[in-house]
Length: 131
Image (tube, rainbow, N blue to C red):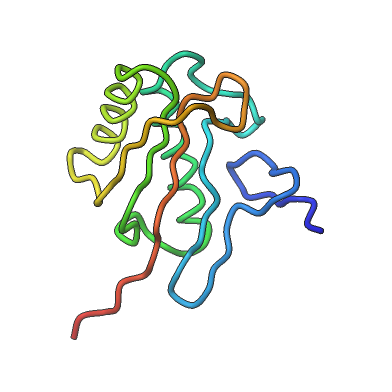
């Protein structure tokens, strides 16, 4: 059993791994809105939580030798009313400066942590060099 792992700039994960790198793919766990000390960021603020999730995702991507251009799909999970989905999407859109990879925005009943309203998952694959 894995007791978790630690990455620079990310909170330690109890009982699971952040990611597995397999060839040119990075399989990641859903990123939650925790700061480096495992404090939940943006209580009742879907936009702030989306930004923190993406900050954590970019930290993880870079830590494994990938780049933001290697992110080919996002899934954004959001708890609550429709306005939370709108606010979370605003955070995603701003983070990517309007150039969001293909994405799915889903409303869900709940997420893993108390007061967590956003989680972000991604498909990450290094693109083959074009000759």
